[in-house]
Structure formats: C-alpha cells, structure tokens
Length: 328
Image (tube, rainbow, N blue to C red; front, side, top):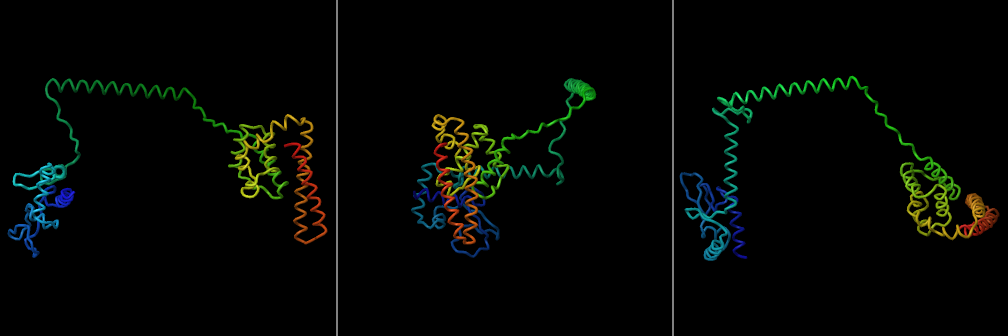
C-alpha cells in the first residue's frame, strides 16, 4: 500500500513536469527558496531529474524509505528509466509524444512556405503520363457523355409523364365521430344534474375518448345501465372521495358490468325489468327535487316544510331501495 501511495504522488509530479511523463522539475534560477533541487545557469529555467533524496523532500518521507519503495516499484516493472536514469511513466510519456507530434503537424499544415496560410487541404492530383493518361481521359469522356445522355433522357421522360398525367388532388377523408359518444355524454350529464342537483363539467376530449373506449366493449344501452348502477350504488370511496364522473365509470366498468348481471337477467322478465327501471328513474328524479327543496327550506328555517320534506325524502329512499333490490 505504501508503494502504491508513492506511485500516485510520482504520477502527480510527472503530470506537471516540464517534460510530461518524466520525474523531472523546473525552476527559475532567480528563486530564493531553500532546498534548491534545480541547477542555476545564467538565470534561465533549468530542468533536473528528481532523485530519491529530492523525492523524499517532496512527499515528506525519509530517503531510506523512498529508496526501498522505488526498488519495490522497479522490481514490479511499474515505471521505466531513460538512459540517464530518469524515471518516467510509459503511457504518459507516449501520450505526450503524440500530442507534441500533432501540434507540430498542425503548425506545418497551417503555414506554407514563407509563412503564408495554405489554401484547401485537398489538391488536384497530377495527371498521369503516357498510355495510362490517354486511357483515363477516354474513360472519363465516355462516362461523362453516357451520364449526360441518361440524365437528359430521364429528364425528358419525367417531363413527358408529368405533362401527360394530370395531377391528383390529395383528399383527406375526415373521420366521423361516433354519434353514440355524444348521446351518452348528454345522457350522463342529464342524469348527473337530476340525481345530484349540480351541473356536470364535461371535458369533451378526455371524456369522449373514455366513452369511445368503453363503447368498444359494451353497447350504449349496457353502458347506461352500468352508469345507473354507479349513480345508485356507489361504494364508500366513490361517494366520499372521488365522486361520480365518466372517468370513475371507466375505472369501475368491469365491476359494474359483472355486478349481479347473470342473476338479474335470469330471474326478472324483460317486461318487469323495463317497468322497474322506468319507475326507478322517475323516483330518482323526484328524489333530486325533494333534496333541492329541503335545502331551500333549511336555508330559510321553515320547520314545517322541513318536516314534511324529510318524510317525503324517507319515502322516496325506501321506494328506490325496493326497486334496486328488484333490479340489482
């Protein structure tokens, strides 16, 4: 672990070295700091390899420990050394050389002779000489003549076909909406207003798509029956949390479709069912009116009217309960 830590410190030093990838350092000769690790020559910046003693000062360890760790790293072929003994990292050194070569190539490509900038990078190839040149010219002339003749013939044929054939107008047939969707939404809004004494806010786009999806699986009459069941026998969560809407109907359509369906159809004749359904609709509409009158009487604090309306309310609720037992 100690050798690995030393190698990481050496990598950091080599990355910022004047010659990247080598264990060297540079410093101006005008520096007044102690522990000079660099040569001083004519006040110019010099480069000097970092030995074990200098490395020990840089990483804060003893020279003996550094020498032991360097020997361990060299034994495991972690780094390489130049002819003068300078330690370097092979990959970092290789990448630095590639970077220098590319930089030099960029300078040579950007400037031509006399320091002028070159033009296009692609230059025309010199013409071939001798028999190869004549063959190349013959091939190019024949290919150009054939391409020009084919292009002219295709152009004339396309113009002829375009002139002979009349242009057809693109007609986009508009999709007609299913009339059952509007019929059901209007019916649902009427039932909502009669039963709850409030107007239903319709979202034609969302509600229309939901009704369309439900009509794919059920008939319009069956869908009305399922909606009636939702109005008359809502569960606790629907009654107190979500309320009644077309979206709630869509989420509960399977439960409503299977609720007492076989039993009701098997035990009640169709004529009796139709009559009971008609009576149920009448009593439900009347119940909504009674509730509305009761709210008005409670606002004006008319005690006699409140007592009378409550009796009617109980009667309506009992009659509706009996009809529901017959139907559902």
